[in-house]
Image 1 (cartoon, one colour):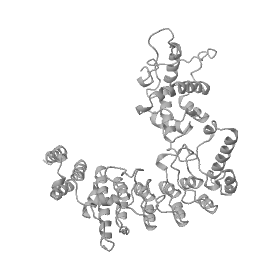
Image 2 (cartoon, helix red, strand yellow):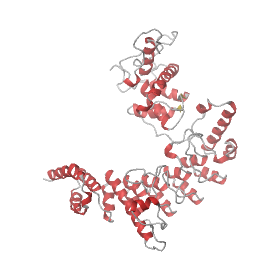
Image 3 (cartoon, helix red, strand yellow):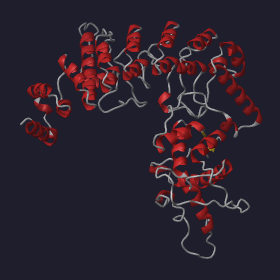
Image 4 (cartoon, one colour):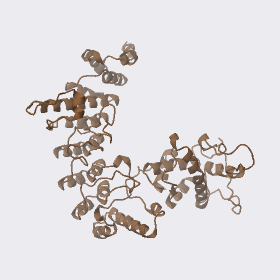
Length: 499
């Protein structure tokens, strides 16, 4: 079919419609046609042609997006214009190159390109789609530049049958950031970048030379992503490099910074993560063992008695279903009851704080959930927090109230298991839900209905009969409008199917 621009990129609508004296048009009609032609191009004849098209397209797309920044379709960074690295253009040229296409007349300014409205392949995306998706990937990692991997990830989404591995967490090039610095700062930036790359190559014999290049913080210097060399080594699972960095004095418990002022490429989801968190996330058990033996905090950045603002290593291991890692962390004292809170202290989700029980249940990891359940409970302080007093409606306890500790632990665990039951039912893991119910956690109407619906969809007749018998155990105060709007139609469907 014939390609056309979407309304959000319509260049004509911003043009003044009248020709009043003194009213200046942004672009002439010929310029508008050239811009549209650039955005709709599906094939290019050379890297020079592509570079010109991308430069022209980015020049006009960024101001458009500045006006539309709040409409949910981000196209550029708030910090400034995105820069396309040369490798990114070569990668894009690989996907868009057509040897049969040449400049129609390279002597014309601007050079004229012939656009074929009949596309040879119905799935061949225009340049505007390549730019949109590649820029979105660059924005997701808080980068100032589009690199070759961003283009490959765009190809994975735009071209059926094209695939590549997911992007690996690694040190980003500093070339783009250095464009805004003076000569002295740029030199320091390149030296630090070289130091990170020397450590990143896995050569343990280069550690001393690399440390000398990293800057005043030495072995604990942070990249623009807010990560230390030890964190990158843990991501790669390089046990020998981790040991060398530890021997050189690397801080075991250094955290990814929470501010983006000095480190603009810090991703919000990794804030406060430690080296142990990264090792657990990537499933490198020997590295996790090494860090724990060296004295890494098993709860990551969490300090005793404080609210947790990032996932603990145990939460990540439980979500991934890594039984061996979960067992190791529990053995070293990790607490499965710890959840994640927002900065303002409000729970992360309406149904709870997604502790390790909920993470395992929500992802259907039955063996991990049972392992967490078998873990002995930790003793808690007898002092109630204000939040607990308000939640439980409890008077302040006497200092001699001995049974309170066990009672509070039981209440907290029951609350955690109710949350886990909700998530397992919501995600369709009815076997985990039944496991939780079998240890005495009461049904809510919602979890019962979701479990019944899942059992019906999976044609598990014995389980349906068991759940119907369980209905009488639901407390009357649980009966809500959901029973009529969702429950009755579901039960009629079950009756109809059982004939």
